[in-house]
Length: 327
Length: 267
Image (tube, rainbow over all chains, first blue to last red; front, side, top):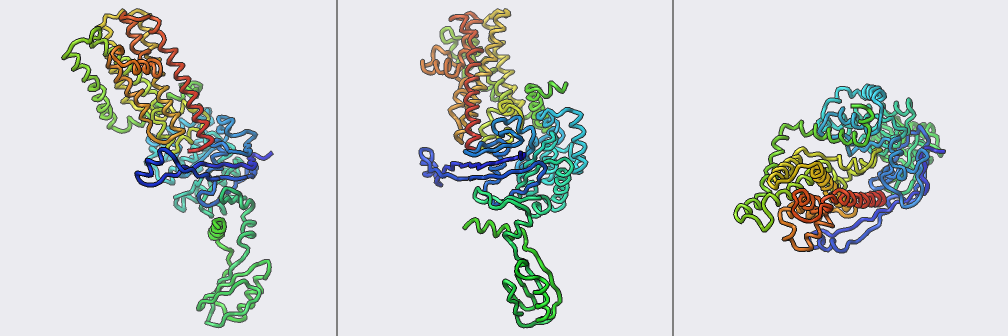
């Protein structure tokens, strides 16, 4: 049986609309317009132990709601969620002992005291024996190079330093599953790379299952063996990165710089040919046309100064997907 | 501290409180922070003091009687605020979505909620109320017998539970509606103001409200009356803890109902 199973999960929120201004506020105290928001509808997927899955979608697509339901914070209206053979919200305490949750935008550490105080409190909250705690803390701080941060009050940490500490805090009790909600938001490039390396390493060495939401496609490409795309509460795609490309962005682009100006070459096998002065942009489908052939015909028509073949930018691809969803 | 104690619910509660107290001690201004609430606590009974000074006793009701009742209420409220400050603060926690974090930890929610906040300056009320009650007991010539002491201690414990229960009801209500619950303040901050007036002089509905709804007179007036031998039955003096424990239990049920609502609806 899969470690995480969601079966036809639905969740609807009631939004109470209020009108602006004083009159609206007074009126709102007596009757409110209600609007039903279907945050998640008929969502089904499974995650196997040790997988590293990316969970992406535009803002408001239902990502956080899904994570909250899997963490046992929210109860779905209908459908089933089983994680490590438990129903999260029915056995809350047993369930949360085995998971770790990191919210990029919300701290789980105590703001005014040194990080170490928070860690020791977390140790007691999760009933971690002192010897295990010691070993674990040493390992994690070494991996994240966070040893010098432990005596600093949380409020004085930079965002990147705090994120490292959040990660350590969420892993002290040795969870088997880690939910990461936008863990890299607002981080600089160096810290992002360090976090990615750390997560990959943790996943390989300890087999910790990870499910992360992000808006940074580099996170997905660097980390995830599988990606799930959610839009308007339903799963639109569930598979490998290559498959995602093939399905949603099967085309390739040849960008060529011509040695001298010449007429647009005739390339019937290409999807489109754009010529702008010395720059040519040719879009084609590898399934229909061999790149070598197109390049040869192009070179025949015009001498080339430079040439690249590019797969579409994943960022762009996802933006296109989100755009389609909005229709 | 042993590991078993540290990991027990009570041990963990003290560890939560410890980290918050340490945080406050970090700011050098914490002593200054004691002052405003100390001034408030000292000046609060001034009106009653001045009245008694000018007009003397109200029938049987001398100043020491009134202030004994008031002192017991103040101490109970102070203890509740000291140990259940987090529950008082809880509605804000829900509004800011911080309650989720509590749900992510494998520990009882009520304990976590109570331990979310701790303010050293809340000791002011406990100390002021306690001193006031002691002085008044002497003035009333109460006998410090074991039974009397036990009755007063149980009464204050009951009072603490009653106030904590009231804060808990406000917390439970915040799961359903966002916004201030000023009504609850009537039963917390407002209630020990009522203690400054002799219960016999209050309108019936108000006296009943504070005997049954929020059983303040059960943990202040009746134990004081029994200990000082004013009137009424001694039995009423013992009722404080059981009745207040029941009302706290009822508040707990409402809170649980609120948690279930939160999990099904979100914030």
